Figure 1 (cartoon, rainbow, N blue to C red):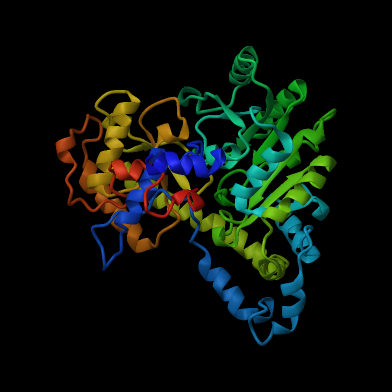
Figure 2: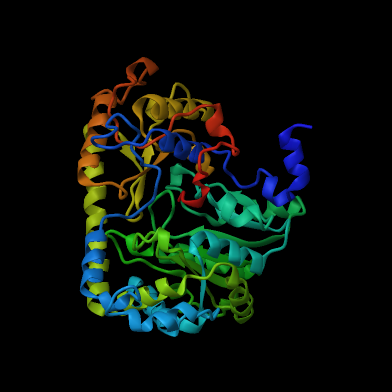
Length: 478
């Protein structure tokens, strides 16, 4: 008996099934990057990581605050007197001061137009844990959630792998700016019902990953009306709420919209939040479920025992997020720096006539490379993507991995690198495309020595395998 079959007999079906989503070009790019990571001096020809939605632009502000507030850490002479209390704390509710601070922060991010109840703040291990936690509360194996396309590839893992929930794509198109229309929702819902699938809800991301757009008030009201009529749940992933650019319209949360709607079934509304993107803290594993449903709050709190935020992390963040002066400065500077970095890339792309989808938030942009495809197919998209991975040495994520209905789109992350790497990235793009992007570019023009700035990993058959000896990117990819 081969080792694969033996493992399947010894391990559970959940552990060995292929529903984790790792067999995707999105994660293959991560594996390729790990094999050949870019470094300005040690490996200048390596792959630049542009498949990671990570926010590193305001670490200096955070580091300054930490240096000026040693009492916030139990590992300093100024804070060690709190060590015993924090080390012994294990209440599922979390530290009261932490929940108060998170609730105030969430309100501040949304312009103070909505208040959040600290008693509804539920902890989990990052947004990944929070998304799975809400699925366990709302759906049974085989049930389904509708989700507009394009959507984050990791949702297959977060929402479906262990819960055995299904995702039903609601197809959106560039012809109407990928807007979520009532017609598309009704079509997907009707098809699911015809297939005898039990639809339990709709999940949206606002701001969108990968589009970098925000939903306007009317669209949010339309979505709330839809789920109210169908009596299904609405899960709003708002983990990029504080990444809206400084010159863009104010961010509108579903929590704000339902305050304005009469006869709204608030018990069907749930918000997912995290500090991984807005503050750049993915390693802290701060995930939040905020539900307007009392029963969900009670159930999710019990489930949170499987993914609590460490008390030490809660203690420090409670102090940091309670500092109004710091919070105000951080939110303002974060928005400004993200927009500045975004504009730098936009100008570089315009120089070589590369089109991107208009965006106003997020840590990425949605790049249109349709003009570089040999033909308008997903096979051609993946062929181009492999060239970028192998020869251009950029880890950009193909639109097909986001379930995009049109070939030729790629997500490009821009906030996870320093200014010097940005310049290298733009130089590589210029060398690649030149001034002739309006006509199809033959594969011969993609030279292995081009120093493009998108981080990627080598693509080969071993990179496709979920059993690769390389550390799985699933635990960190976003």
